[in-house]
View 1 (cartoon, rainbow, N blue to C red):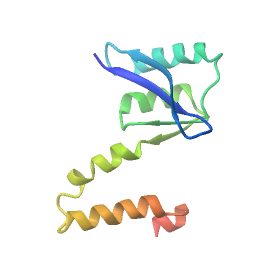
View 2: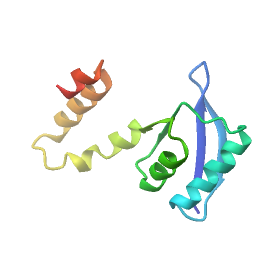
View 3: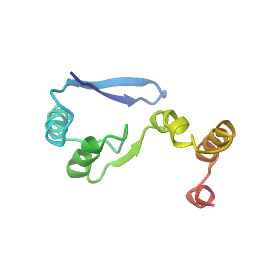
Length: 114
């Protein structure tokens, strides 16, 4: 049974547990129900930003229920997929290092896209 955590950060950059849920399935309806319950516990205050893995169901639920919340993908999950995504590159280790530097050291969108 999937176990989802809602983790936030405090002013000291420490992770804090905001909530959790055991889910019977990871579909849009289930995520909407969990988010709705979570918002009820928070007096319907939505977060300014949320970071998730690249699950299509949670992305759709967030888009439907939190239109003013910035949704980003977890950098750890992105980096974990690099070996697979860069498997056709001649020197995967160098490409992985360059990609990480590009993502982590980019100051703005224009520099990243360049």
